[in-house]
Length: 259
Length: 278
Image 1 (cartoon, rainbow over the protein chains, first blue to last red):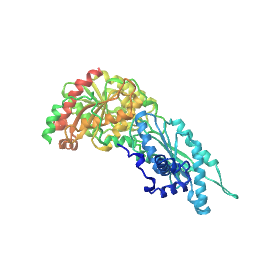
Image 2 (cartoon, rainbow over the protein chains, first blue to last red):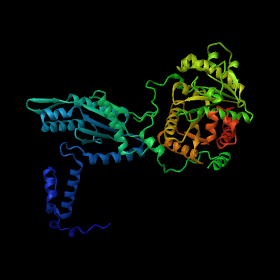
Image 3 (spheres, rainbow over the protein chains, first blue to last red):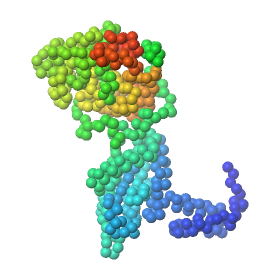
Image 4 (tube, rainbow over the protein chains, first blue to last red):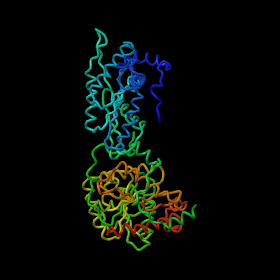
């Protein structure tokens, strides 16, 4: 692919005002001045827009779009590396009550405080996302079971210890329910199946009385949704060479008669 | 939830630990009930007996197997009487119509479905005295992964897993395979696919199961886990007929498609499995 000669781009012919205003409102820094050259300026605008499109405006966390991309990438890595990854789904307990009794601005403050708190509990390579409403998600790549359990519990404890100052006279206490699921190793699962398993655990945590962590471990005895989908789905691999292939003449002729 | 077979919440009891399997003992098991385990056990025994082998079929579901129903047998003396000291082992072994021997557990054995160490020891003792008298002993086990089933299977040197092409049967078969691999360190499991609709269905199913296993249940290095496809038994109206009449297919209509498949299965066992059992 050949790109057009940068010299041919006339910045005045492009309608960049809306984009610039959007970036300005979002407070994105480092937007180069137009006189830095058309390519540099345009690249700056594009980068800033990309960044905006991946962030949740309220909390500054990854938004759902970004989260889906991270999830897909992580599934890819897990399938190839054999190192499991953990997905946590978190939901603030009784958040509606906060909104109803203190107003939505207070609710927003709580969401922001929760976002900061969760982000401070994880490693730099982990992705914390606002999944929607008062629901958050964390993707932890290359995560052992013991570490994953520790982190989930750390998040839960940090949040319940949190005292959120929403006004000079009001501090709020909150708690969170957390559900977690490890991605099955050596297999390409789907983002939907993975989220569904974590969600199931979140419901368990809610049903079990909230302010708790529930994890879906890969048990030797259980058959995961991923395995089930493969049992009945088409597999592209060839037949293993050693599967015994003894012609079964009696059965064959009998089958032919039957059909 | 993703669990197909709900695993016991407590750590698995000692019986599921690998025991030293007895030679010449084949376990016939399944993940799901109603897939034809007892039907296969009885008719396979008849087919092997026809080929001149001394065969014993043992109700290893401790009274819950329907071997007596399938064979239309109502013995006065059962394994239960042997356990309680009322009868000698010899008196509990009876001749089945197909020319093989059966040892029925008797309804009283249900009490023993709690597998205490005493029951285990008694069972092992009985098995040890039985095995030398036969060319092959078939254990008709229960379905699924209860401790009784796992115990019975642990006594066998080879496992024949019966499944039908139905999705529920396959999922449960897969779960059982995982348990047998995980808890008993089985390396090879032999598959019999019952009630197949088309030629090649059973092989395709075995290959599919194998491929999912390869992805999810890596064996130890140098010890790959192998499913061996032993044969298909085609869906055949003659089977239903024989079952309803409580007769053996191998006596009733041995040359029907399912009967021929059963005979073929016996040949394959004779050629590939029985030499290893000795």
